[in-house]
Image (cartoon, rainbow, N blue to C red; front, side):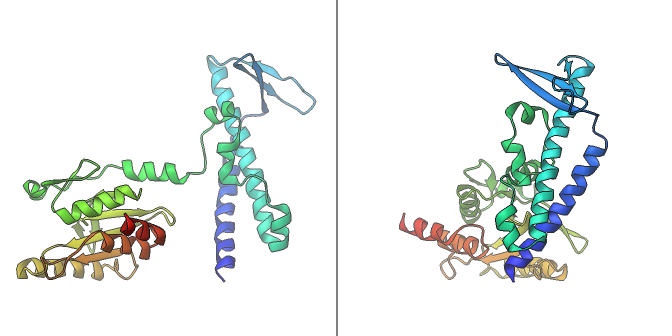
Length: 281
């Protein structure tokens, strides 16, 4: 059952998260951070025991500032740990227990829910979708400058591409908020290829490669296209389901926006209603 598979997957994620949190807490400093807001200014104290209600004052300058940061991190990680352990226990005790005992705040929601003062001092140990996208999108790669003069079409994102169809694909990906890279190098079978588009599936955090062949009615072009397709297949890329191949031939085999949207719907990258609303507009 899909539900059971999702539970098992979540349990594995939580177990790994608990292990990560425990590793951080092992090196955390002694004591707990107490925060007192004096006017609009936070003041920090370190409580060494539950009997110590006030704690020792910590300056935000010098060596004390580092201790403040570490105690804030500890406070955040402890909350993540408690939430992850509660959720894991709920999953292990079955659906009925889940309903009654699921934590109010999930572990991956803790960072956004903690006090702004603590959040500003803590470093997240869970990478959110937004953070993952930023890291993926900003990862530098070697620019493909093959026949640079052929890149005559400018996308909405401001990059140069080789054809109107590539511009159309890029612009739709941009409009739909789907992260992509243009002609990013990919090593397959010991060879380096440059797929027209490398797309990030945010749900699975896996890459999808998109090759668009726009002149398959040209014999020489078609032969080279099939060689590229063979390279992907030989490396197992196509078998893993992460390769999209589209073709186009002038007048004989057109390729337009609804084709792009249909592919994105089939891949689960956009909801079906986006295709309907786009056609309507």
